[in-house]
Length: 427
Image (cartoon, rainbow, N blue to C red; front, side, top):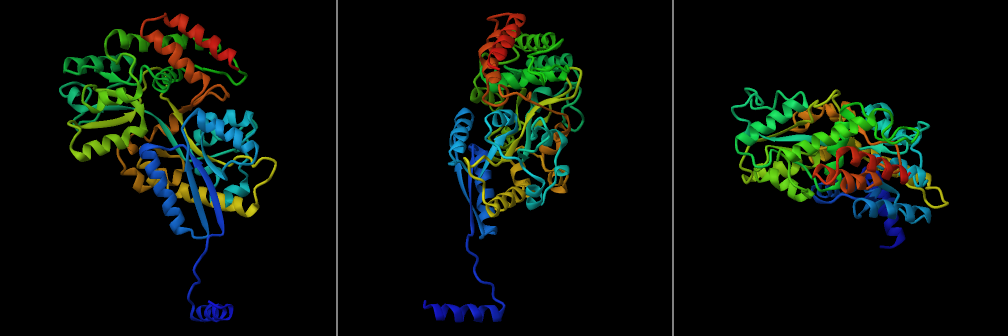
């Protein structure tokens, strides 16, 4: 088309009130670590955003979860070759701060996204801040372990109410009674979790420690300070007893631990909310074979709390350069849109960290999410230490020390002392 013809067409469309087609003005380079069902849902959100925002286009890349992701962030951000926006575990925020790869999220940034700190659950927004109160990430969800249950093994016991919901578990003794009742009703492995894996072992241990009011790493860097050592021993003794009673699987890796529940061999499963889509899909396909539910991990010890983490949005440094203000505004528009559309992410089992979605009518009818949503107020995040959190030395200690101990290879007391020394040496 000649320029004069294009100009005439433009003028005609303007006079006719016809909108000109929009063209991408900003490209947001995005890195995440979502695979499986999480990955499918996140890709759908990206596609929807791009369709609705022709002036801002997300170019998404999915990298390997865990240590590989955080290593790549560190090396790429330092030379200005990282993404404009990335997903980040809040449990790894201390590592990001010590490596100086994160940029602060300012009030102007939040305003550009149409957000404020008050929009988020207190536990998640606090975990997104540095020691001085500076915000470095925007929480997207709260994910935790929950207690899944197979109703068939609890029929005729005091642990199902008239509506078939789990009830009556208010202590370790109650939970152990429920497991024995399930065993009496034919459950081969009454409770399953990844007893031979880092995440499964650590999350159950940390929940039992936190429910006693124990501290794994204090703010000044002391490992298991005060009476927390005794509380850690108690937590490990409980897990060891479950092994000795034959209630939990022998050194089960993650996939095997899930299969024990989905195949109907286990009455209970202690696992993340991220397995909710697995259960929903199996139930809808008719291949599950039993009725199930999921609840917040009960108050087994002194306090109602559960290990939790959050996926969040963070903006890495750009080497020695600063992000163009227009690009940063586009990045924050992406963040704001994702938060306001988080109901689609909740479909993966997560609890939205953005309260207007978590408190919406749409989320209130989403099951079993709404049933365990109370954990958002009760969550205990990992210690603020660069040796704690996802894919950290603390997780290594769980699989290398705690898991062998609960399988009888060393005493709980010796294991906790070894764990203390191992973590302290890595700090």
